Image 1 (tube, rainbow, N blue to C red):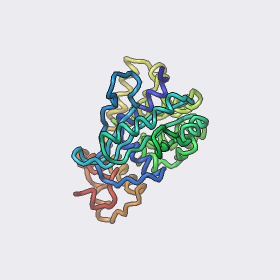
Image 2 (image 1 turned 135 degrees about the horizontal axis):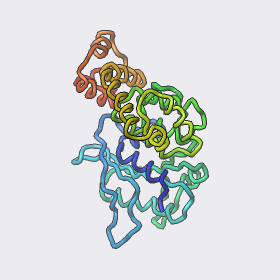
Image 3 (image 1 turned 180 degrees about the vertical axis):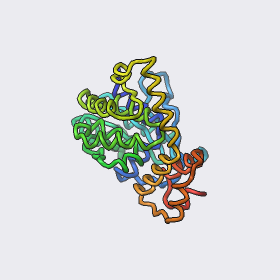
Length: 298
């Protein structure tokens, strides 16, 4: 039966499929062009009666009429000969369906499992030796910069899972949550909390309990209670909403800086003085895939 961590990692990739593209583009040698749409697909690969031929998460890159890459995301926490033999089947089935390159991205929180699943897999098909792209503990970057965590919140949540015993990683992640969109911050916190080991959860709880914005962990709900204390939380939310435009402008500039995009002074001033939160939201979404400042305004 899948563990809570397994389910949380899967939810992270299903709700943010672009994270898989980001990982392949930045942490591996898989070449994926920027700016293409990313879409979650059905994970039902069955072409015969079967109960065991469904990968965790299936993603396509490119427009529906011309998909350029397929990604199968599998979460594996322990060694399994049966699971390992499934990986080339997933790749072959998805390739036959898409007729374009397919990558199987295997997320392994356990270092031994990562080594196991990274080994080439010989198949019964002549000349077909399969190799998954594995993201193990050593492959997840140690993110100690809040600026980078703002631009890559999904990867920062995974960094908390793997490297959260380094308090700087947790502090950078928590600082980023103060900057990213208020409606997204609780979601990323729950990802990190759900994936983390108990000792890392305690650090998250400790930092969260001393912050000025709402706490969403089970610990915090119990600590702050409901009713009257929820009113205090709502008051904090209202206080944040009042300064949302300023926070979004700051987050946008940080994302652009992290992505290495030069921002002319007149554009910086335009962003900083903008009070239209919908417009800022649009720019922030575009900044995630922008390669130049012109992409922001097109």
